[in-house]
Image 1 (cartoon, helix red, strand yellow):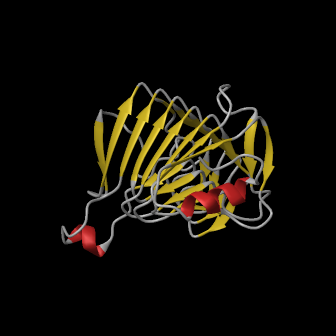
Image 2 (cartoon, helix red, strand yellow; image 1 turned 60 degrees about the vertical axis):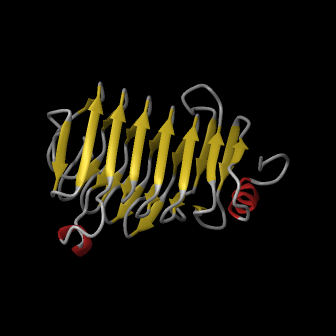
Length: 219
Protein backbone atom coordinates (compact mmCIF):
# COMPACT_ATOMS: atom_id res chain seq x y z
CA UNK A 1 0.00 0.00 0.00
CA UNK A 2 1.24 3.44 -0.89
CA UNK A 3 1.16 6.23 1.64
CA UNK A 4 2.84 6.22 5.04
CA UNK A 5 4.66 9.44 5.85
CA UNK A 6 5.13 10.48 2.23
CA UNK A 7 3.14 13.26 0.63
CA UNK A 8 -0.15 12.63 -1.13
CA UNK A 9 1.44 13.35 -4.51
CA UNK A 10 4.30 10.96 -3.79
CA UNK A 11 1.76 8.30 -2.81
CA UNK A 12 -0.01 8.73 -6.17
CA UNK A 13 3.31 8.55 -8.00
CA UNK A 14 4.34 5.41 -6.12
CA UNK A 15 1.01 3.74 -6.90
CA UNK A 16 1.23 4.72 -10.57
CA UNK A 17 4.69 3.17 -10.80
CA UNK A 18 3.49 -0.35 -9.97
CA UNK A 19 1.04 -2.65 -11.73
CA UNK A 20 -0.42 -3.92 -8.46
CA UNK A 21 -3.52 -2.54 -6.73
CA UNK A 22 -2.68 0.14 -4.16
CA UNK A 23 -4.39 1.79 -1.19
CA UNK A 24 -3.57 5.31 -0.03
CA UNK A 25 -4.86 5.98 3.48
CA UNK A 26 -5.28 9.65 4.38
CA UNK A 27 -5.52 10.80 7.99
CA UNK A 28 -7.78 13.75 8.74
CA UNK A 29 -6.37 17.03 7.49
CA UNK A 30 -6.04 19.50 4.63
CA UNK A 31 -4.01 18.31 1.63
CA UNK A 32 -3.14 21.33 -0.52
CA UNK A 33 -1.99 20.75 -4.08
CA UNK A 34 0.79 23.10 -5.11
CA UNK A 35 2.20 21.29 -8.17
CA UNK A 36 -0.88 20.64 -10.30
CA UNK A 37 -3.48 17.89 -10.48
CA UNK A 38 -3.12 14.38 -9.11
CA UNK A 39 -3.01 11.79 -11.92
CA UNK A 40 -4.42 8.27 -11.56
CA UNK A 41 -2.82 6.16 -14.27
CA UNK A 42 -3.86 2.88 -15.87
CA UNK A 43 -1.57 0.68 -13.80
CA UNK A 44 -3.67 -1.29 -11.33
CA UNK A 45 -6.51 -0.01 -9.16
CA UNK A 46 -5.82 2.93 -6.87
CA UNK A 47 -8.00 3.31 -3.77
CA UNK A 48 -7.84 6.50 -1.69
CA UNK A 49 -9.34 6.19 1.78
CA UNK A 50 -10.02 9.20 3.99
CA UNK A 51 -12.05 9.65 7.15
CA UNK A 52 -15.49 8.18 7.84
CA UNK A 53 -17.36 11.47 8.25
CA UNK A 54 -18.57 11.93 4.70
CA UNK A 55 -15.21 13.38 3.74
CA UNK A 56 -15.54 16.52 5.79
CA UNK A 57 -12.30 16.04 7.72
CA UNK A 58 -10.06 14.89 4.88
CA UNK A 59 -9.85 17.62 2.25
CA UNK A 60 -7.90 17.66 -1.03
CA UNK A 61 -7.76 21.30 -2.15
CA UNK A 62 -6.25 22.52 -5.43
CA UNK A 63 -6.45 26.14 -4.29
CA UNK A 64 -7.95 27.26 -7.62
CA UNK A 65 -4.60 26.54 -9.28
CA UNK A 66 -5.45 23.36 -11.21
CA UNK A 67 -7.87 20.47 -11.52
CA UNK A 68 -7.83 18.24 -8.44
CA UNK A 69 -7.72 14.71 -9.93
CA UNK A 70 -7.49 13.28 -13.44
CA UNK A 71 -8.39 9.62 -13.94
CA UNK A 72 -6.58 8.76 -17.13
CA UNK A 73 -7.93 6.53 -19.91
CA UNK A 74 -8.42 2.91 -18.76
CA UNK A 75 -7.42 3.79 -15.18
CA UNK A 76 -9.33 2.57 -12.10
CA UNK A 77 -9.77 4.86 -9.09
CA UNK A 78 -11.93 4.69 -5.98
CA UNK A 79 -12.31 7.53 -3.49
CA UNK A 80 -13.89 7.16 -0.07
CA UNK A 81 -14.32 9.69 2.71
CA UNK A 82 -12.63 12.72 1.13
CA UNK A 83 -13.57 16.20 -0.06
CA UNK A 84 -12.45 17.29 -3.55
CA UNK A 85 -12.44 21.08 -3.75
CA UNK A 86 -10.71 24.16 -5.11
CA UNK A 87 -10.32 22.79 -8.62
CA UNK A 88 -10.11 25.22 -11.55
CA UNK A 89 -9.53 23.77 -14.99
CA UNK A 90 -9.76 24.54 -18.69
CA UNK A 91 -11.38 21.86 -20.83
CA UNK A 92 -13.77 20.24 -18.35
CA UNK A 93 -13.78 18.57 -14.97
CA UNK A 94 -12.86 21.25 -12.46
CA UNK A 95 -12.77 18.74 -9.62
CA UNK A 96 -12.37 15.38 -11.37
CA UNK A 97 -11.83 14.47 -15.03
CA UNK A 98 -12.27 10.83 -16.06
CA UNK A 99 -10.91 9.48 -19.32
CA UNK A 100 -12.24 7.02 -21.89
CA UNK A 101 -12.54 3.48 -20.57
CA UNK A 102 -11.78 4.49 -17.00
CA UNK A 103 -13.64 3.32 -13.88
CA UNK A 104 -14.20 5.77 -11.03
CA UNK A 105 -16.11 5.14 -7.82
CA UNK A 106 -16.94 7.80 -5.23
CA UNK A 107 -18.33 6.77 -1.84
CA UNK A 108 -18.98 9.29 0.93
CA UNK A 109 -17.20 11.93 -1.10
CA UNK A 110 -17.89 15.67 -1.31
CA UNK A 111 -17.13 17.36 -4.63
CA UNK A 112 -17.73 21.06 -4.07
CA UNK A 113 -16.36 24.49 -4.85
CA UNK A 114 -14.80 23.58 -8.21
CA UNK A 115 -15.09 25.36 -11.56
CA UNK A 116 -14.17 24.81 -15.19
CA UNK A 117 -14.04 26.59 -18.51
CA UNK A 118 -15.79 23.70 -20.22
CA UNK A 119 -18.21 20.97 -19.18
CA UNK A 120 -18.57 19.47 -15.70
CA UNK A 121 -17.75 21.96 -12.97
CA UNK A 122 -17.50 19.18 -10.41
CA UNK A 123 -16.89 16.12 -12.60
CA UNK A 124 -16.49 15.57 -16.34
CA UNK A 125 -16.95 11.88 -17.05
CA UNK A 126 -15.97 9.89 -20.13
CA UNK A 127 -15.76 6.49 -18.43
CA UNK A 128 -17.82 4.49 -15.94
CA UNK A 129 -18.62 6.69 -12.94
CA UNK A 130 -20.35 5.51 -9.76
CA UNK A 131 -21.38 8.06 -7.11
CA UNK A 132 -22.78 6.67 -3.83
CA UNK A 133 -23.72 8.45 -0.62
CA UNK A 134 -21.94 11.54 -1.88
CA UNK A 135 -22.54 15.25 -2.48
CA UNK A 136 -21.77 17.15 -5.69
CA UNK A 137 -22.65 20.75 -4.90
CA UNK A 138 -21.67 24.41 -5.48
CA UNK A 139 -19.61 23.72 -8.59
CA UNK A 140 -19.57 25.93 -11.70
CA UNK A 141 -19.15 25.28 -15.42
CA UNK A 142 -18.86 27.87 -18.20
CA UNK A 143 -20.55 25.36 -20.54
CA UNK A 144 -22.74 22.35 -19.58
CA UNK A 145 -23.19 20.40 -16.38
CA UNK A 146 -22.49 22.54 -13.35
CA UNK A 147 -22.17 19.43 -11.18
CA UNK A 148 -21.56 16.46 -13.48
CA UNK A 149 -21.09 16.30 -17.24
CA UNK A 150 -21.37 12.88 -18.84
CA UNK A 151 -22.27 11.45 -22.22
CA UNK A 152 -20.63 13.70 -24.75
CA UNK A 153 -20.79 12.36 -28.28
CA UNK A 154 -17.73 11.43 -30.30
CA UNK A 155 -17.41 10.22 -33.88
CA UNK A 156 -16.44 6.77 -32.59
CA UNK A 157 -19.64 6.48 -30.57
CA UNK A 158 -21.76 7.71 -33.46
CA UNK A 159 -20.25 4.94 -35.61
CA UNK A 160 -20.72 2.37 -32.86
CA UNK A 161 -16.99 1.77 -32.52
CA UNK A 162 -16.71 2.65 -28.82
CA UNK A 163 -18.96 2.40 -25.78
CA UNK A 164 -20.36 5.54 -24.22
CA UNK A 165 -19.72 6.61 -20.65
CA UNK A 166 -22.05 5.70 -17.80
CA UNK A 167 -23.12 7.37 -14.57
CA UNK A 168 -24.62 5.52 -11.59
CA UNK A 169 -25.99 7.83 -8.88
CA UNK A 170 -27.10 6.23 -5.64
CA UNK A 171 -28.32 8.04 -2.50
CA UNK A 172 -26.39 11.14 -3.49
CA UNK A 173 -27.10 14.85 -3.79
CA UNK A 174 -26.32 16.77 -6.99
CA UNK A 175 -27.58 20.31 -6.56
CA UNK A 176 -26.75 23.98 -6.05
CA UNK A 177 -24.40 23.87 -9.03
CA UNK A 178 -24.30 26.42 -11.83
CA UNK A 179 -23.79 26.16 -15.59
CA UNK A 180 -23.87 28.79 -18.32
CA UNK A 181 -25.56 26.60 -20.95
CA UNK A 182 -27.38 23.53 -19.60
CA UNK A 183 -27.74 21.34 -16.53
CA UNK A 184 -27.54 24.08 -13.96
CA UNK A 185 -28.10 23.31 -10.31
CA UNK A 186 -28.83 19.69 -10.99
CA UNK A 187 -25.64 19.65 -12.99
CA UNK A 188 -26.31 16.82 -15.42
CA UNK A 189 -25.88 17.48 -19.14
CA UNK A 190 -29.19 16.80 -20.84
CA UNK A 191 -31.46 18.12 -18.10
CA UNK A 192 -33.53 16.15 -15.63
CA UNK A 193 -33.15 12.45 -15.01
CA UNK A 194 -36.77 11.40 -14.66
CA UNK A 195 -36.57 7.62 -14.89
CA UNK A 196 -34.24 4.85 -13.81
CA UNK A 197 -32.48 4.92 -17.15
CA UNK A 198 -32.04 7.98 -19.35
CA UNK A 199 -29.78 8.37 -22.34
CA UNK A 200 -28.08 11.71 -22.92
CA UNK A 201 -27.27 12.38 -26.54
CA UNK A 202 -27.60 8.65 -27.29
CA UNK A 203 -24.19 8.25 -25.69
CA UNK A 204 -24.43 7.69 -21.94
CA UNK A 205 -26.43 5.46 -19.64
CA UNK A 206 -27.49 7.00 -16.35
CA UNK A 207 -28.89 5.00 -13.44
CA UNK A 208 -30.46 6.80 -10.49
CA UNK A 209 -31.24 5.12 -7.17
CA UNK A 210 -32.75 7.48 -4.62
CA UNK A 211 -30.59 10.41 -5.66
CA UNK A 212 -31.63 13.89 -4.57
CA UNK A 213 -31.59 16.10 -7.64
CA UNK A 214 -32.87 19.50 -8.64
CA UNK A 215 -33.58 20.52 -12.22
CA UNK A 216 -33.29 24.28 -12.53
CA UNK A 217 -32.45 24.38 -16.19
CA UNK A 218 -29.88 26.97 -17.14
CA UNK A 219 -29.65 28.75 -13.79
